[in-house]
Length: 290
Image (cartoon, rainbow, N blue to C red):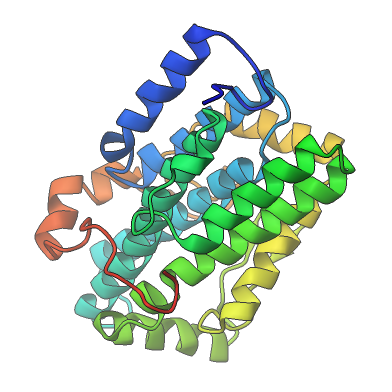
């Protein structure tokens, strides 16, 4: 079995570091802050051992946006002046947290296996068949010397498709989250959908129907398009490094909007688990995405 870091890369120290990161999955999946910063840390590692994996930077920025929405929910609960019932707001928070948790649970596992050169060891039942086949296609295309831009885009498309299918029945359309789904749809109907804001760009991306799988996938690819240019990606990465995520400010403009609490102050991990003891459970089986 070949051991590699990103591109046939480095030595035993790199393998040891990646192996340690894989073992830290549960610790890093504790809350939105650890996930968001972990994505950026792993993206930095792929930059150090090219090619970089832009999906990791995308995941960081989307997770950062989600964390800011989570603190907005906490602020609305604290003010007590929202027309939405507190119980419904808490359900919306759990909806976001569950999706955030499941995507990280899946992605940290399969991305690190790829970086270690162990994609063939991805376990059925632990990792969806689609993403196991996606990594095989990607690694085969790289070995064949196919054009980098096309190979990169194809992988991002596969990973976006996988993550959105991963949460489609487990979160988005799960009966447990019917109230949260209705709140999201109501906000969309009244033109209140919060866009995904990307730093250092004019991009402001809306899904336009979160309950529709294809629209979430399309939005994911719009995020990639906004960072496909090397200079734009570099600027986004530099901004993210300068602004550690704590959920306390809008993603791209610290001066805009009212002050908000830090995410961990608003939603301590123990308090989150007290809302629902299944919030950080492993994913339920999904015959639609085995």
